Image (cartoon, rainbow, N blue to C red; front, side, top):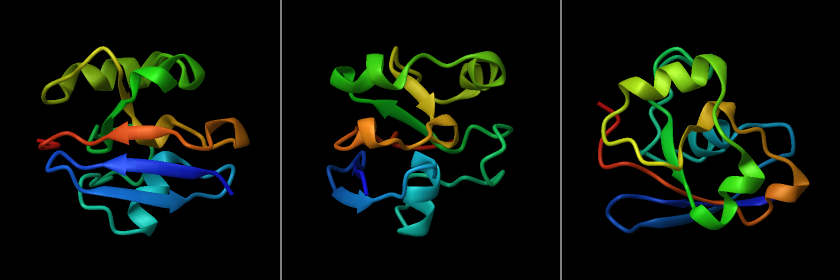
Length: 106
């Protein structure tokens, strides 16, 4: 099972086993990581699962498209590697992925 590294804005870090096929958002929700609110449940309609993909992983994860790209226009403090974690499907290739969480989702 791939391990995803979540880094909170305050520096707290979590290493979580996330099943292939789940999303990075679901891994955070299932493990009660506070920095991802996921108010819409993962349907790409609220942007409360915003995260920053570590630069070393961004090419492997890929750029946002479609609805996700539009939703990212509404996030607080976007960065070039911003993604919605509900749109990042976990694969074996993402084992070791590092995502940072913003100070606030609002």
